Length: 274
Image (cartoon, rainbow, N blue to C red; front, side):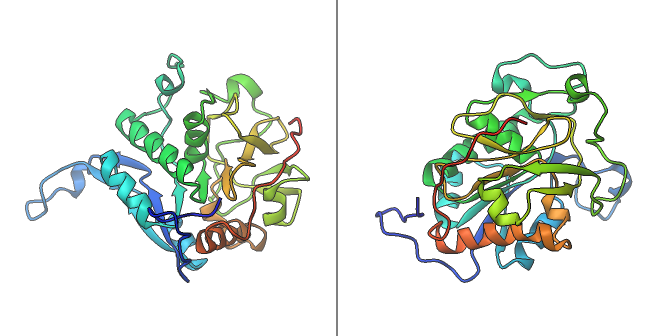
């Protein structure tokens, strides 16, 4: 559905659309950075510059979305043309009705609550959404899905999902569904990606269809056929824009944000087993 203003009129596309980018995590500043002349220690936002660089280099204007109240978040979404959900820490399993696994990593429940509300509000507006790694998992939970809390316990170690190589390196293969928006965007069905996660989608959320898989069956991407552009990828796509076969994902996302989803229409996607 095309994005509309508050009075129902279609939003006029910006040449360089504004893209809200969620914070990856909250951090306390390292002690060695606190000096007598420095500002007092306090909680800080953390977000890798790669997300912002990927958006800017493909034609968008990134705007960092820190945790905020729902009223302010709604106002932010009214002002932007799309939402990019960044990677980050594990989502606390209470968000999808489970107890913590012993291998659960660090979590930030306040950040979870804010971002889940933000995703649901963006989804209700039909805003184009590109969700990366934790962001993909967050969309799944927001739509009622669940997560595998520690992937090696389920799929073993056939595929290295937490690579030791640089983020720009492609380390494992993925297969993409034939009849999918992702195939149209990337231009290929068999390729390679990077990988930095130990959690993954388990039960898919409402209206989501898996569209890419690792060789061990891990869901590596999904999309929402009822939206012009709602795509989640488990790999860190923001680090791969130097690869011609990967930069297309951000280019397509920015194009969808620019025209309010008019170019990409909702479609039927075949459900293919991983």
